[in-house]
Length: 174
Image (cartoon, one colour):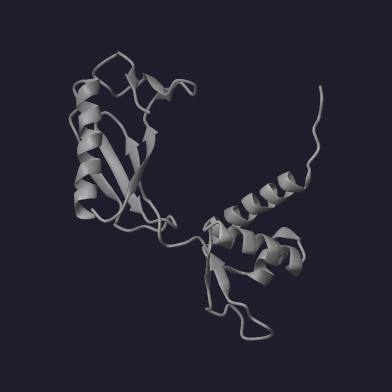
């Protein structure tokens, strides 16, 4: 088995991915905090942050995170961008939560009882839920993240079994 090494481009891509994951988790970090979390030097952190800023993947704020020393502000995932409607779907209910581009909750958690006697009825309930949210926030692009009850084929995305469903046929949700 051939093992490939990491060239500079791959190392930079891995570091950018690590930075984005820390920013998603913590929501707002200073250069110093990113340096501590990643074990990289401040100049290396500065270079990676500059690249992420130029790509529009992060935003910079002049808000100071510390009262001492030289402070260059903080970094976070930008507030602009597509929102995400997260849905947990069963044949008897849809639970959903709308989140902004930084994955911060926009509305409260909602539980919607549904009656889906067929796979088509379940799909229609999902679409109607998304449309209702989109009508409330027409100025935003809204992506969909689905969690489906039962066993789902990881390759095809087809729900193989839904124990609570009245039907026994597979339903394709992608």
